[in-house]
Length: 406
Length: 120
Length: 76
Image (cartoon, helix red, strand yellow):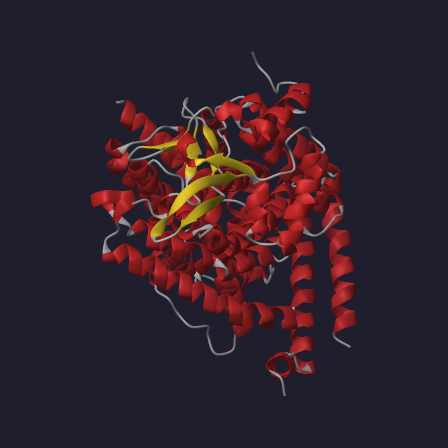
């Protein structure tokens, strides 16, 4: 019975981490510009992150190590330095976008411009981390995050052609007269939004915080797969909704002021507020997760004491680490830099830098010294390596094109 | 025979299983006609930074030196003060080394001063 | 030519080739303007049905006119 409860909570958690301003913005733009066509990118991204999350949970449960700790141990600090720095930089950029996301939700709800909300949001996030425990944050945000089911409800109410949706799950090339650069840029941004490294580093640290062992392997598989699938399913719902509300109206959804219109046709006035609640809560959850993820990454790579379940005095460097991270991320929001533009760039950069993080990870997942008889099956390796390469190639090609065009 | 790969960049824990940093550097003793012996391990940012940039390491060392006697130097620990089982590298008598110096200082002077930092 | 110079030259050529033609720019500008006009129309009817607050409608109208002005300038 306890395991069933844990599984449910685990799935709910995964939803909170998956859906954030990146997945919302990219899915909305995809639907607005290309209808159902880019659903394959969401599917591909979801499959990849589900595999990565399951692997990171298995790694923690079997080896008792976290990923950054093991990566430094196995590859040495000098080799690890490059992925380390790149991951920190890109995740940090995503963090600023998420804080911006909460601020934007508050701006639209209240009329007060988003830079003013930067400080309150940062303070709230910090206070939740300082005083909260891992379990409290995880469960609290997840339960609140259920509001994002509104996207699924909205999509269903619009009576999409489910056959067309299903067909769109297979990869396709852009149509002859469409904007190719935009198509591939949004595709790569969707991949970056779905396959966020901070998600599986956070999950891995969480598995250690919750003291998982080998008995959790089956639970881990269920949580990783169903959790990520549910998140992906909600992203698809956003693509469908945007395809049916924005595309016919020729609204591009490339400015955050247009996004709250998404759920108006299916859900009316409730749709406006549900959208804002979903955006705000999902971004707050992501803010907390990414901040912790960054702090875990540094602490585990440098061998410090760490743990959200510990009081700050018990792991001073870790707690001051995440404090500093939030402090550094806030000014960008205060300066009024457009969160949506940061988001699209951050997602694309995440995708482009994917192999730097996933390749060492795959090597570890095949190392018997850490995983004994639980090393990867060939399919898992192939899925991750292939999708990482696709993401990186698309990124390298499409980011310059988009910058030149946009 | 202990390989460098089994020691360098590995996690150290103290006798209470609390994390005590990573092995940031090792010092080998060269002996005539015999294989080199692991004499010391080094822990701390000065050693770690030195693997990337001597300048950064020196800059950090200068700041660290201001915090007291014996600081501003790499933390060098004799190999006999380290125990190894299948899983962990134990740092024996960790409190006699400065590995927790920064952590302790931050706890006393910063974290405790922020409301909610210390709950007991 | 040194490798760095060759890479820089190649990058410049690729970027220039990918730069948008005037027709492309005009098309994009037209799309942006249409998008914002549609947005304002959508918000106005939502406002009539009392689905969105007035302050939001006001902000959207203001953003729309700013973005339309920017797009019109770019198309030149």
